[in-house]
Image (cartoon, rainbow, N blue to C red; front, side, top):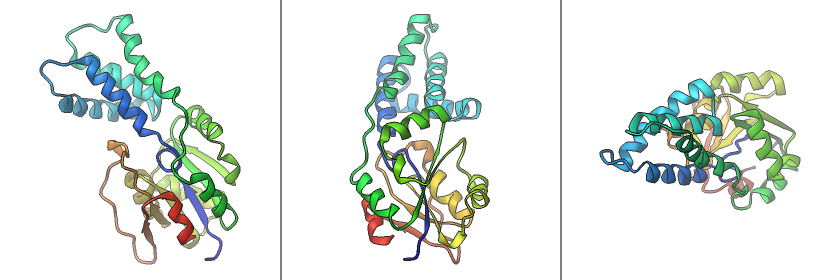
Length: 230
């Protein structure tokens, strides 16, 4: 294959991320211990509040902490005292303390791909938060550039074309999220590779679009399989 540009997602594509949020949410729901709402109903409320907080605060731990507090305020009969506020925030803070865990064979695969193609890391979220993850990952050396964006939509992908002189027919977006990685990249005219993750964030779930004529969509079982295609 001729040299391509691979835009590669970070969270839940290169390293584990959402599993830590799921554990924090489980602790929060247990702590709330609602007597009328089931855990599933509490989660539905939290999902809606998270959507609202993303609009206000963007993605990341700060937004997540706001969502937990707001959900508690909506569902609890107790007022949120400073002590409760600190306890709820601690569920979010524990995520930042988690060690960064690569998904299987990620460094080896990036090393292989870097020798053949131009790799650009493209992740969304709070700049400081995502920058820390990239630094902690030890994977920065494999990428020609790092892009941290506030949202991954078709307009964002299109803005990369001029910045990096991308050729649509030779550019692929690689990631685990249909909503943020695959569908908008296809809409922007790129090819795409879906690397499914069993714990992809529920707000990233979306029906996978088909590739338009002249574009390609690959689905692989794990990140290391990119070596078979690139």
